[in-house]
Length: 265
Image (cartoon, rainbow, N blue to C red; front, side, top):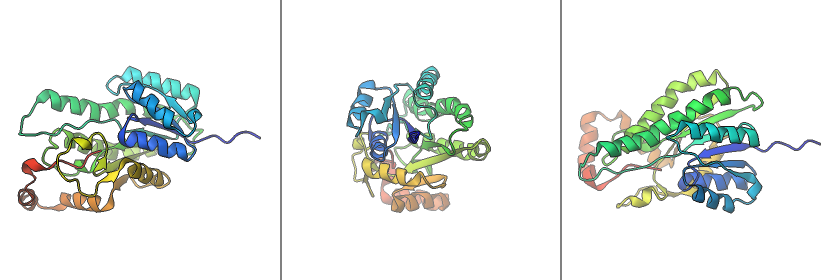
């Protein structure tokens, strides 16, 4: 009897945080997981923690280099075939403190967070559209609740996440016609090396393992937006409907100007 094909996930940004936790979560449920990121040594550490090394495949790449995406995709397709799910999860966060606007820093955050996803989509969209042997093909883009409204200290980070949400919305219908679902993950505060830089209490903070479990449970659904934790999601998303005058008055009242940072991965 032929062996049943294991479900395959490709996680870009798997070296730490949510990406690493998601790799472990999926592997515990007998998924194969391809691990990508710039830091090969970190990817190898995640690979060692998998319940079975055969469930993992290390594919180093730099999201800023399209050629490395192409090479990693070629290696994955050759080794295992097309993935059922891809997570474009790589990102960086630079809080803007003291209003010191550094164009180079803004450009770097934009290049990694937004253009890194665009590079991934450039490689994935044609390949996933042709992967007719897989019944369901999904691409997840990791945004943030910080992408729903402008928040202090998120001046570099938040716009990249807002742009990713807009991009996924624009692509959703056209990709569905090709049999590919694009979906958005929008976490609030998750305990990761990224949020460890914050110097303030983070409401509704959850662990990376909890975030990974929530993402796994959402895989069988079809919701475009996977936002969590729910209380934080409801609060932040409702701010889109506040009149500007009330919204800025709320920020001033909360003293958010220099003492808080956005929800981030």
